[in-house]
Length: 320
Image (tube, rainbow, N blue to C red):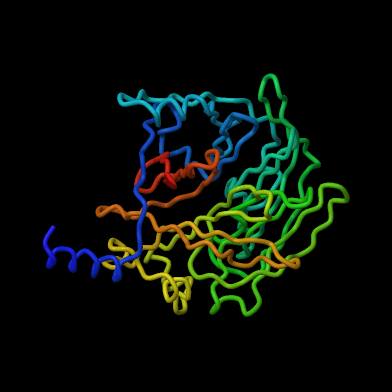
C-alpha cells in the first residue's frame, strides 16, 4: 500500500465512525406475514419469544440453538418459528381504543406485556402481566392483571415501547424523550408486588427508543435508537448530542435516517448514558428499517427484529 493510499484510508477513519453490518436470519412461515407486525422480543430461558403487535392468541418462539446453528453455518437453513399459545383477554373489548402490543419481558416464569391505546384523542399505556408454563410455553394473563399507565407527554402513536426488569420491578421506557419534548425526561416503574407505579429520572435522547435488552449485572442495558425522517415534524429533534461526540458513520453521513444501539446504565436512581460508544448500523440504501425488538445473544452481539417496514427482518449484529 503506497503512502497516498494509506493517507486516504486514515482520513476516512477520522471522518467516519465505524458502522456494524447485519447478518440476516432467513425466516419462513406465518411470522413473515406483514399483518403480524412484530413489536418486541425477549428470551425465556433458551427460547426467543417474538411478540406480534396484533392480538391473535399466539406468540412466535425460536430455540437459541437454531439461531446459533444458522449463524455458524456456511449454508444456513431457513428457520420456521413455532407458534405458542397466548391466553389473554380480548383487549379490543377490555381496553377502549386498544391499538396493540408494544413490548414483552420475562422474569423467571413471570411475563409482562406493554399495551398501547388511543382513546378520546389521548395516548394511553397499559401493562398486563401473567405467567408462562415452563413445559408447554403457554402464556396465561388473567383478566384483572391490567393497569393503566399515563404517558409522560402526549404525542400521536407514542407510548411505552420497552420493558426490562430492575430490582424485581418492570421498567417501561417511553419512546419519545427529546430535549424539545421533555425538559426532564422520566420513565415508569411498575411494582408487581403492590401493583403501584413510580418514576425514574432519565437523560434526554433524540428520536425514538423502540425496545431495550434486559439489564446486565452492572445495571446496564442497550436500546434501539431509531429515526425515520417522516417523524421529523412530530418529534422536532434538537441537535443530536450523541453525534456531536461520536461522528456519523459513512452511510449515516448521507442520510437523515438513524439506526443505532445506545447503552444506558442506572446510577443513583437515574438512567444515564454508559461510557460505551453507541453502535451505528450500516444503513440500507433502499429503505429505513423500523427496528422494534432487541435481545442480546450471549455476549457476542444482538438480535434485532423489524415490524413490517420494509419487511419482517430478523438480524444479528456481531460485536466482533
